[in-house]
Image (cartoon, rainbow, N blue to C red; front, top):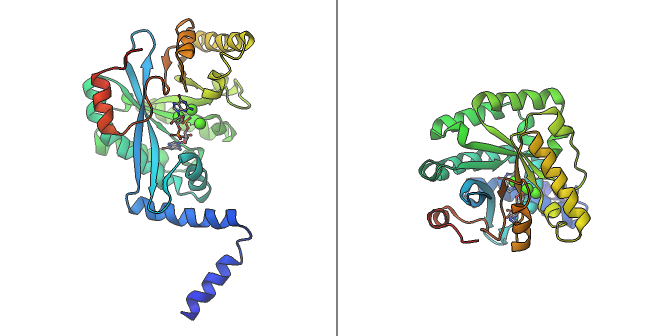
Length: 277
Ligand code: C2E
Ligand code: CA
Ligand code: CA
Ligand code: CA
């Protein structure tokens, strides 16, 4: 008991504020949550604007904490990244998504997209892990899309090129997520072959604010289309946004207007009966 008490003191002496304490607790809880099956996935469909069919579903992590309830990914993903736990959590998410979505994706002919963190990409074993999961789940790599954010830009070009070439070799598609949020640059698109660009919801939300924003949006979409990139608009919440997209060259749309992220059993009903827009 004395030894335990000592250890406790030495840990707490390193924590200088409440935030650190919460973080410390979260890291421990994430470890337990992976083992204790507290994580699960929801899926949000993406629609082709022209023919209004589901082209892809995006897997989104959810954490049901035993005492705090549902913890949003915006809170636990950064901590999982800092602590390195994202490697294990990301592996779990990819494998689970492949397993849950495979029968649906094959029956209705759509893709699965999974978000990946820069920390996972930096991990030496990531490509081997992906291969192993695809084989174990017998998931067709051509049906898999990996969503990466621009922060991956800060990786060395050599590392990114290796990673993207490996994915291409396997037939996996790559999406650039959150485009148009914050300090966006075109350098990622200039440098690498990106299959899909997902326009961030904050960018989409500027649309109806004024005509100038709408023009910038349309120009970016045209530019991306001229590079033969598949363009997806995220965070479509209103019919006005949707109508604007139909007047653009934008290929696909995703957002609450069509569907919120939903558990796999609800997804089955969803695909059978598409929402009427
Ligand atoms: P994201 O990849 O940009 O995912 C889209 C987020 O926007 C999701 O939030 C989704 O629920 C939300 N969203 C979808 N449609 C709408 C809409 O019409 N309006 C609004 N206001 N929001 C909408 P969520 O599920 O809370 O996820 C937040 C972020 O957490 C994700 O952003 C992603 O960066 C990260 N994340 C989630 N799951 C994973 C994962 O498995 N791995 C990694 N590395 N990151 C993940
Ligand atoms: Ca995403
Ligand atoms: Ca996004
Ligand atoms: Ca985001």
